[in-house]
Each structure stands twice: as structure tokens, then as C-alpha cells.
Length: 350
Image (cartoon, rainbow, N blue to C red; front, side):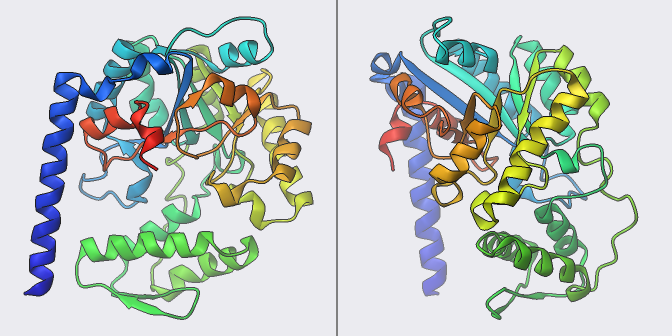
């Protein structure tokens, strides 16, 4: 009874919040003070464009940033209120070779999922937008899934109802909603581990959950190099995101150097174009440090992106071009919430 009352109260607060945000969006209040941020850079971070509610979706749902229809709506909003630039424009500005338009925005994707080609690209073309996709090159054109997608598959297809966490704690679920929440918590727990320990936990998972994974099951999850080259011809830029997507502060500097440099070399070999930018895996404060930033700089990248909350004033970008903020976009965000995220209010809510 007490738990039910808490859930009812939470739903009531959520509905009230959405009403307030909708009112602020429809009246323009959400853009108060916007002119002060004219000299700013708003970098949006997407991962996947897909419908995570469709039948049979067995990948990691939190990695879906928006459905195709919602992504279209978001791009329409950007077209009205921002000037979308490309990585080349940013680099030229950093080097003093050109200026940036007011309210500059940059669209980025991490990892290199196939739906960036099938679902996002047609919508980007519709609005004549460029974008940058950060490739974990060891997964492109392969059957090798990211560990979170492998875990999601195992959780989705298991007949079990419990899982052991790295600390030995066992948690169980009674319905798909609880299962998804435990999966998300399990993924976050693994991210906190050293890379070797994380990989050991991942390799044991299918046996732990008694799941058999069909051969080549994940071969259509990621982009192919032919698709990368086709997208490049349509105004999409590609950047480094390591080879195997480790959190760089969880591995040795020598290994981090190989991951950072190797990604750049592979992309340049496949595309024939210089790679100017890098995105840090996971990208939060504990995942980056000055040593990692120097490795990125020394590898020949011109700028690099975190997942520290944005937007950024242009002077902030100039102060540290190797730790540029990005705004993480989630399919859990309503459209009014999206409008808040891309507004200056976003920097004051932390």
C-alpha cells in the first residue's frame, strides 16, 4: 500500500512536470535568455535511431536515442532554432580560419550502428544536415556486438529470472520491466570494473543465463565499411571512438594509445579522408583525464568530445578543444524535455 502511494505520487509529479515544460515550450519561455548564448556550441549526442518498443527488440534499449519519427521532429526543431555545422567548420574555427554562425549546433552519433544509415541518414538528408559518427572500428563490418547488446540479448532470451552482479549480489526479476532495470544496473556495474574483469564477466554471461547465441546473429547490427563510405558521400563525417570501446581510464596508457591511434588509422584507411575528431567512450568525468587528452592530441586529432552536459560557450570550447561537452539524447526524453536539453537552461540544472 505504501509503495503504491509512492508510485502514484511520482506519476503525479511527472505529469505536472510535463505540463509545465509543455507550457514553457509552447509559450517560448523555454528560450528566455537564449540571446546571451548566441556565441555557443550545442553538440547533440545520439546513438541509435530505432523503435525499442517493437516486437523482438533484443538489443540494449537505453542506447536508442529516438524513434525515427521523434528524430525527425527533433531535427525540425534544430532547423528552426539553430545553425547546424559540420566538424570541418568547427576545426576551421578552432584554427582561426573562419567564424561560426550564431547558435551553432553539431549532430553526433556514437558507436556506428546500422540504423544510423537506415533510419537517421534519410532524415538528415531531408533537412540538409551533416553529422559526425564516431566509430568503434573493431565492431564495424563485423559480427562482434558491444557487451551491452550481448547482455541485452541474453537477458531477453533467458528462461532464468536472476543474475549475479560483480560484487556477488544476486538480483531477480518478476516481469520484463524489472528485468530491463536490472540489466541496466548490471551494465553500469560492469562499467566500473577494470577492462579485463569486465570482459571475464561478459564471457561468462551466456552460460550463467543458459542462453545460446546463434552464429552471425549480430552481423546486421553495425555499419559496414561500404555504408560508411556511402554516408561520407552524403555529408557525414567520421571520427575515432577507439577500436574496442574500452573506458580509457580503466586500461593502461599504452593500451589506450593503441586504441586511440588505431581507430583513426583504420578509418582513414577505409575512407581515404583525414579524421579530425574523437569521442571518448562513456565520456564522463571519471573516464577522461589530462593523460588521455594528451594521447588524443598527440594522435593527430584536432578536437574531442565528452558526454559532460552541454551546451558550451565558444570560449569554453577554445579553452579546451579536447573536452568539448555534448548533450546525451535518450528515447526517454519527451519533446519538451528535448527542448530544455538543447537550451541554455540545461547548463543551470546541474
